[in-house]
Image (cartoon, rainbow over all chains, first blue to last red):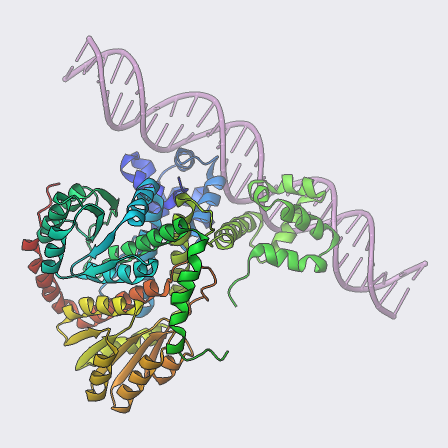
Length: 285
Length: 285
DNA sequence: CCTTATATGTAGTAAACTTACGTAAATTAT
DNA sequence: ATAATTTACGTAAGTTTACTACATATAAGG
């Protein structure tokens, strides 16, 4: 298990905390960086609780005491992961909404990094390696993800294609058979059309992989699901970050496939890379 | 220059230090991690110096005092670890390459977040708002990014399209005129065909925006460039992360456009969102 | 060798952190 | 509902920790 980020741990535990503990939690989450620089007295005052409450809070999260907690918090803040609970505001300037969007995306990635099931990833890599054919299906925003996946996996010398047209998808699903892998990408996992197509594919004995929301209808009809829990899109201005997470998971899968193929396969990838050279201006620097 | 790692700074300064200061330095460098966990007294004893010497040592390195120094040291240790072993190894397991790929992407995003020019973002938002028409162009892997951009920007009620076919791109570029915005997405910015097309567009008085590598040929022919510095792809197994960065930058731009449109525009976005509802299975939970 | 500057340590103090204990609030049983 | 029991929280005292001011030692320069 990858070490979870302390800040995420705290926000996950928030509902299970006592009154004063959650007061402390909220103050820390509101500005973790300043928390690392304050004394126990300052923090206690800000949270309107007593100093021992802060101390107990720290111990609850496996710290020896307050200083140790601050240390761990400081470490959690590094690694580029900046926690943001602040949404984009209607009167934000470029200089404020830009980092917010980056941070939001980074935060989502860090969350999935810590939660993703490695055994599932392994299972999916297995299926992809053994596939006779791979189809990447996505509609709307997920269409781009599917397209990207094709671009990536085609390098493995596998018969792979992507489709963002539901009629094509339906036809292909109904003509598929054992050995074919249908890889569905869907933000919600609730698009009726997509779920139906997955059912058809499944009924024909094909393998169905779902990169989608856990417990969604699509997840239920999939042979293997890669769960991407996406926070409800409460804010008008915040973009949908699941696409990005999906892309990175596909990167992980592609890497898994490459590694399985072993070093003998590298020259093939090199060849593909080199084939693009003549289309480019050489670098002068 | 990006802030150097504190540990490196200390070892660089070692020759310039006093006798007792260098004693402290050596003890810290020998085991920085344990240093973060010890008190000033413990450390002073280990280094065989007095407590104020340790304190002076800390201040020499721009820390407010000993606790602040420990904090900075702890941070330095984290970022060091994350940066060092970020490459994927041929004999990595799922459990090791998965977080590596996530961390790699996160690091890249954090880097761009801190480097991106806000004024450029603003300029591009300006151009997009004023555009009569917007074309998103990309080939290969950037084609998916362009497609995603179309999906996003079409919601703004603007005549927008994406193209991943160079012939189509060329034709559109040559028929474009003032008021048209051609938005080029390119990892390297060196694909000859793409640069040529950008030149054509520019010659016809259209606005050319480049989301690409700084100082690349494409950047040079663009009216405005959004620089994405991408580290040379040294590692065989590491996926290309610039796509992801490009997508997030497009998210930023889309957010910028939404904010400029003001709150009157939100109902329009809501309408688009709602239009998809009947295609989905409702949530039960 | 004296003077001056710099380096280091001592001792005291203030702040920060922790512990022990008692009261208040909440939960459960009667 | 009330009593009993558990859990949550704060007060106050004690302990550790870190910093400051000052003194002494060491080194450098005249």
